[in-house]
Image 1 (spheres, rainbow, N blue to C red):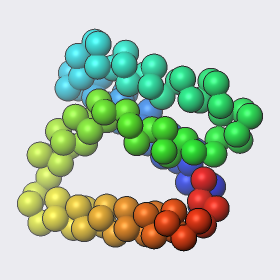
Image 2 (tube, one colour; image 1 turned 180 degrees about the vertical axis):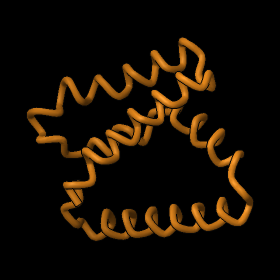
Image 3 (tube, rainbow, N blue to C red; image 1 turned 90 degrees about the vertical axis):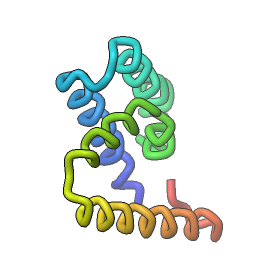
Image 4 (cartoon, helix red, strand yellow; image 1 turned 120 degrees about the horizontal axis):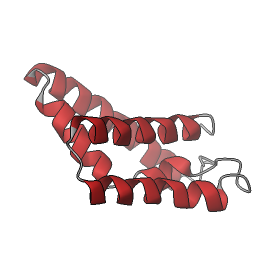
Length: 104
């Protein structure tokens, strides 16, 4: 799953950009989001070959504001399906992590 780390980083960057362009994030929120994304990328991205970027981007809390705005605009049935898919992905990640699978 090491190939997924740059994908999660790109998704985080796109979400911050969408939130900024739509006005869902204030100036301080998008600055905090940009810094929280850039700090591990600049300090550890090259040395770690982008490993753990998914973990680092999962704590960028302004992304969840944008995700909430996006989900609020979708039909309820689609929100339920996406939530179930997210729960499934989280359970798979957690099980692999608990089994000491070399995930990141």
